[in-house]
Length: 150
Image (cartoon, rainbow, N blue to C red; front, side):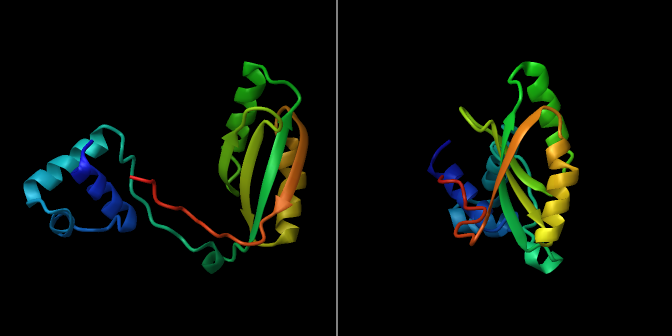
């Protein structure tokens, strides 16, 4: 990956809907080489897809929480069962396995505190292998979907 590939990535992170013509102009290439580079970045998996950024508040999703999960057991079967289950919870926008204690961190979004409480009681606490859930509320988002440092 060279300086031009990094420029392409920076531009696409800023605006994923750029036409190839505009992208080529911004990075100083003609259309064909720019297209080849974008295709190579996609095929190599550096660019894994394109998507729309949605404002959750516009959908009535205004309550953000972070949930820390500690499992009862850490064996392969328990981990797989939990990870499979958490992928099915639509209000979990990010789930990461951690070293140490707790085992996982979940970013959760709901309409309000009442909806979060229902989700916590009806889905999160009943996931396979869960020993303990601890949650904290997000006061303010300072950096959201920041670009990768290319």
